[in-house]
Image 1 (tube, one colour):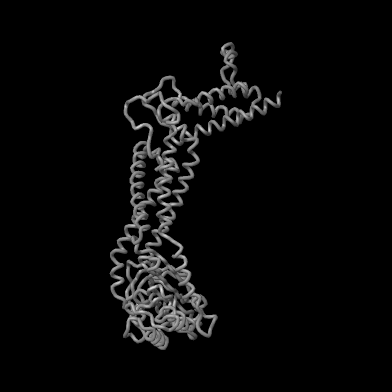
Image 2: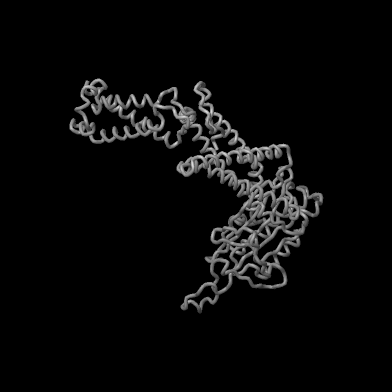
Length: 517
């Protein structure tokens, strides 16, 4: 991604020898600036999809449906439900009062909008809420023979294989008849099980009194049984003031151990995306993001074609590919979410007497936001890497990319320092002495061993010599080659390690000389 431009594009023309060093090192700052613009654009997309109203909407709804206690029983709210009796008290108390707001605080009747409740006077209840339960069959587990006289029924934990699919109870309404599951609906991951869609379902009425009667009838006829393993309460709200949908799910799990474990989900999402001028600004950023992604993809394909298998040996190139993959996944989620919103949003709002299933839309929107968050995390890692190497790698890369020796003459300095180090270690005589005694010295390493030098010092010197010869062979030949070979990141690291080792040797030699003197 980072290589937005290259100094050399190929061809047979010779590089220009008359240039300014400031022009050489301009490539990486330009790349860094281009990538920084991309990063800012990605941040705008990520944080532009959320706003503080989402937090406050979730907070007020959680306070209403989770913390409100049953009248005359302060200890019972949704969070503290532990028995079936507590569950029905919550259904007939805080849930019923929280869903139906049909009058103003001074008891004045609210204006009628297709007989729709307005929670906290600002949040429209979309359609009607839905209640759904999943059950398991009897004899899904085995009772030990010694206890069969004490209990004849056994209900195991919930699994799709153990699920009860038969009608029960009064068998004349939907809440007593099994409804098959929808394969497109995501499963719910609870505390003690993973639950699919379908089950025994009923929707609440627009009338508060009718809903209260419904709850009393279900309680009287034991709608919740020993085989019940989970009850879902789903409903959706829309706040036009902040253009947000709030999708709410309250879950009561009935584990095989007995008791009730409660959990909840509050998703505030923006399904109507392009309403205000700011929304259209976000849309323009989305277009810019796609342009960046197209350019970066072309650049990475060129690099793969140029370096072949060597391209995959760098961890930073793998980071490039990971970023591209995450960006394409984010775009796929974006397209899918918008298509789902376009197809289903109108259908869900057509009837106010049915339950509108916004949970699937919110589910994919949350995943889209998560993908963007992961993408921006890795994008910032890449940005920090570019910033760190800007003052070092860019200069070396610019010098070698035009096929000439750098003005800094790094190779000459390393070569000279290497010879000086060998002279101080007496592994290599001075040039004048060498010309006189060239016939006497055949093996420098053996000579060093005879003179009592440490074996580690000799091995490090030989390693530096190998590095020097390999680098000189490629980059410091006597003749200037027209077909240059640009330095790779791996070769730059080797050159850097060579310089570091040389600096250590020089420091070690200086210490020894100081001790001698």
